[in-house]
Length: 137
Length: 208
Image (tube, rainbow over all chains, first blue to last red; front, top):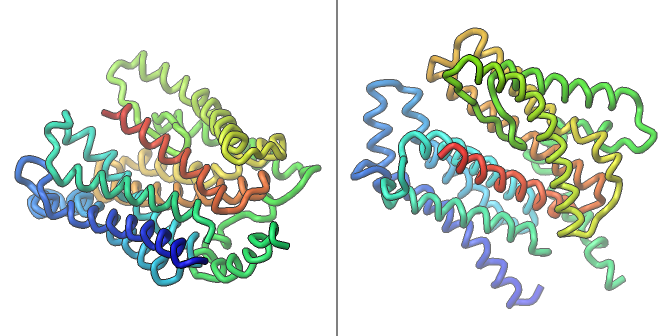
């Protein structure tokens, strides 16, 4: 592999890394008015402990995707492992979106910067997965 | 030799990767014997495949869910007549969903990778990839019967089981596409992921 190709591939991997970091960061910035997901989680803890855990799913998802992306940074041969770990991570996020978007966000204008940040991270991780699969080496 | 360099290099890389704990675990829960079997198929495959489809169709009706590829969406009808009609229609939707799954995979394989191999064999074995989702439907039905889904704890458990079964089903689908369509596992994953995330987008818009 030439140095230029190596550099291009490294860029793709950084895309996934950036995506997972965005998903993690979104947990700590406002999703609804001034409430962050961590705020909602702490508020919900008083009412129902386990329903509150749903608000941690983006954080869990981000951490799992980050692990998947770190694996491919460290061992470029482990493409399938990285992709499967990313899929598991994104599944948590999909589940959260299924619950959160229809119930809490009636109009897109209601969503805070956290939502957009998380969604951007989600798209970046998907692009990263596809690129990992398409790139030959 | 130069043209086949990828084929020559890939087995080492694949072997190295398939020795990882994650893929070893996934391979353990993959019914390789049935997925890699070639024509003429043993009656067991037909019986298992048909049972999976019938069971899946019945369970979607009992659970009050509609299927969309690997996703299941609850329909909460307030009117009894509509609910009865949906319960009657959801098994039909399940079958249509299965046929659409086959149709779209065939379409993607032909359009993206120009692969037309074994459509009949693929259709016969395809129901086996739905085994994890049927297991999830059974699990969900068990929770409904015991009225456990009114408790948030069990809703979260139900969702986590769904994630596990979806990933398992997605892996079986990828493996089957790779075997029957003679594609590299990476390319098979591209097709399954296109379907999975495409259907996610559609279901999300439907829910909104």
